[in-house]
Image (cartoon, rainbow, N blue to C red):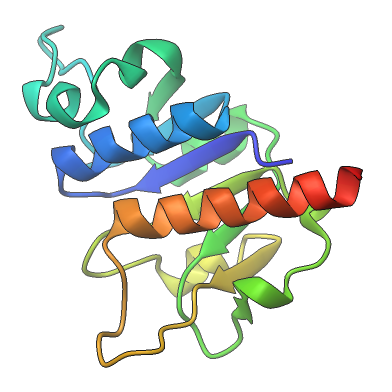
Length: 159
């Protein structure tokens, strides 16, 4: 069961807010914000208006924690992580059968994605195959596709 999301070095506060809203919709417990990823409350303890605009209150329902680096996250949290990234050895999402292998999904920077040394540290790497001419989805859209796919897969396994 997916309980957590990691957002690694995202640039867009609007994407972060959208992920909070989607996470709330599917019952995610916690979002870990890493590096340059904007947080709902900025370093001056002010609400981040661009996140609030797209989260529409979901930032109040989902626990979140900021870490400067992924190393800090790994030192402090016991997570089984699946990287969501397009790589040569990634498993297409529709071929993932055992979702109990991980409890957390990691999404990377909108342009640079997840560095190989980080995805190599994860339990698995999963991709959303692209059928058209574009090579990728917006991070918040990809998050929605991934979370709902796993939610429906979990429900199917329980039946």
